[in-house]
Structure formats: structure tokens, C-alpha cells
Length: 415
Image (tube, rainbow, N blue to C red):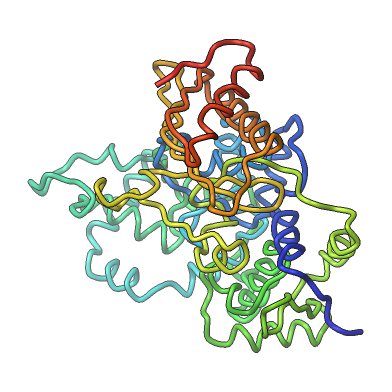
């Protein structure tokens, strides 16, 4: 059998369906939260809360209105754990063994720091062992420095290196602050029978993560795969060929790209549905800047023709789209971006600007879909009054305001 042939549009549909963004939203449950994280493989953590903190927003994009506390509860219950993957991430506990291998092998930077700071390590471990879970804030600063991003106190550095080495884990979060505890205590409920002898080999880890990345991407080139879990680029193409040879992956092509692509065997029926026209993305929603669909900016550009950059770290005078612009997903395409801010005390969801892509048509379907997405997002985190300030093209400003008036039945505040 020859390779599965995708157009760019059907390759997009594969990615979105694999990511849980292929169909309309439903009433979510706590099990759905766990299920969608399993589907993505990881959920990136970021603390910026201009709209909502990224992990919660990524879940909302897929699940609609849900209880954010469910994510916190899944971590505290041991269904998830935190570790470094694509970045700092929530990860399904069933994948702990893969990351335990990475912890055991460790990085030279962490091992070197721990050797050079034996007293700080011992102090922190004794504190956690004797007194139980701890936050960084519970250690008083004793070195006379002011603190801040670049001047962590020694105990904070010790906590982070012990976390990287896997000696400490995150047992829960309090107001989004990490609470550290001994690995043995965290795993007592989640994986009571865990022994390090169960950890897979480095090659088994690379194989498993490559398969998970291809499954999460729907259809993927070899060069897209390492970024997903931040695995080594060297040898990735050869590994995918081996996985295709043994049937774990299916070979594919994407129109206009002269390189082999791959589909996970679990997604074979999904590919059949999409290629037969039986499944198309019907979602209109907003994406986090750290959503897997767009976190690889080069892939988003190649697959969606969407050049995206988060401008949080760009000086205000040089920003083109705003401090925290959110990509707009509409029926399988990334059609623009929206700069928003949730004013929680005032119950206002401020849309500072909407920028559509140059080839995006303003029609009733787009306007109603975007209005529904804004209403749902604003209602989900308790800022039901929606203020639309400005849009490009300018005609969208009035039509979007009108659609919001009609969808809520009440006047929408104006800027």
C-alpha cells in the first residue's frame, strides 16, 4: 500500500482532530479534562493570566465551560504530575516512567549544582522530610539579596534542582504556587508499586515519545516531531522510518511538501474519515499562545500560513498585535488574532483589538462564531460584559458588536 495522501487542508484537519479541536464543544466533566490531557500528551504551564492562565485556557478551547479546579484536583489526586517536557508541563501519571528515566539520567547542570551545594540540598530535604510539603515562600531569605527572577534564594534553587532530579515532586498547587513533597509520598497514592527498576531504557523512551508526538500531531514530518516533547533532533528521521517499517507508524505525504510524513497507526481510521470528507473541523475558538497547535511557530506557519509571535516580551511601541494576542481558530483555519484582557473585578472582558488575516472574509458565519466564542470565554471566567474596542478590517467592529448584542440580549459596553 502506498503512502496516505493529504492536502494541506486535510493535514490541518488531522492535527485539529488529534488535538481535540475537530468538533463542537460539549458539557465537560472532570474525566474529560483528564482525557484531553492524555490526548495531547502534555499540557504546558504558564502563569500569565491576562485572560486565563494558559493551561486552563488550552482546556477551555477544547472543552468549553468547565471547572478549572478539576485540573488542580487531578494534580493533587495523582492523575497528573509536573515535569519538564515541551516546557514545564502537566503530564498524565501513566507516562511517569518515561520521565523518570530522564530524571535518573539527569542533566550535568543539575548534578553539578547539587554536588556543589550539598548543604542547601540537605537543608531542604530535611525540612520536607520532617515537616511535610513546602512552598518556596516558606523559606526565609537569609543571603541579603532582594530576590526577583534572576536572584532566587538558595532554597528556591535547591527546590528546582531537586525537582529536576526527581527527588521532589509537586504534590499540589496553592494559588498556582508549587507545593513540593518527597517523591515517595507523592507516588504513594498515584503509583504505589513504582520501583526505578521499572523505568524504560533511553531508547525505549525516545521510541515512546516519538510515537506519542506523531499521534498528537495527526500527521507529521520528522522535523516536526522533536519539538513536541523537546527530544533530540539527531536521529529522529531514522527512528520514524524504523517505526514505519515495523508498522507502528503509517507513511504519508502532504501536498506541496517534498518529504515523507507519518501517521500513528491509532489514527488510521481518523485519517479515513477526514480524507473521505466525513469529518471536518467545525470549531470557532480562541487558542492560548502556548497551545500545541501553535507552540511550534514554524509548523503553524507551514501548515496554516499563520505567522505568530507572542509580544509579551516586545516593547509596547514595537508591538503589532498586542501584549497577549490569542490566535482565532475558525473551521479548520487560523484566521486572525485577538488581543484581550479579563478585568475580573469589573466583570468586563475587554477585546482591545481583533486582527484578521488579509485573506479572511468577514461573513455571518465568522462573525457569529467569533461572537459565540467570546461570549463563552467571557462567561466561563466570570467577566460576562464584553467590550469590543477595535477591529481590522474596520467593518468587523460594528458587526461583531451587533452579534454580541444579539447573542446576549443586553447592551454590550462600548469603548
